[in-house]
Image (tube, rainbow, N blue to C red; front, side, top):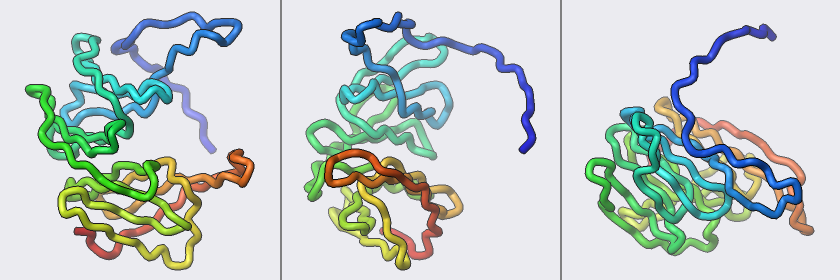
Length: 196
C-alpha cells in the first residue's frame, strides 16, 4: 500500500464546535450521513439519532432547512432530494424554492428501511427480511424481491448505494439474540434485471 501525503485547503466550517461534556451528560448530536446536492451548493446532514435533518447552504454557511426524518438521498439529475419522514412517508422536496413535491405513505413490515436510487433516478425503499432483499416502489406501490443467488444477506441493512453501472453495494450487520452487534459485511451485487 502506498501512503501519499497531501494538503487539504479549508473551504468552510459549518456549525459551531461544542466542547465535550466530561460527564457525558450533554447529548449534543453530531452530524453524520453527509450527502451532497446535485449542483454541490448544498449539503445535508443527519443529527445523531435524533431524527433531525439539516440542509446547509455551502456558500452562506447557514442551515436553510430543518426536517424531521432520516436517510436523505439527493437526485442525481436535479436539485431534489428525498427522505423517510418520522411518519414513515417518503417525502420528495425541491431546493429552489424549498417545497415538498410529494409525500407517499408506505406500509412495510419494519420501519428499518433505507432509501435507494437506481441509475434512472427512481427511488425505492430497501428492506431486509429473513435474509431477502425487498425493494418497495412508493410510486407504483409494488414490491420487488431480489434473488441474491444463495448469498445470505445479514439483516438489518445499514446502507445501500446503487451505482450508475448497476452495481449495488449493501452494508449490513448481524444482531445477536441479546441485541449486540456481532459483525457485518459489505456485499456488492450486479443488478442484472431492471427494477420497475
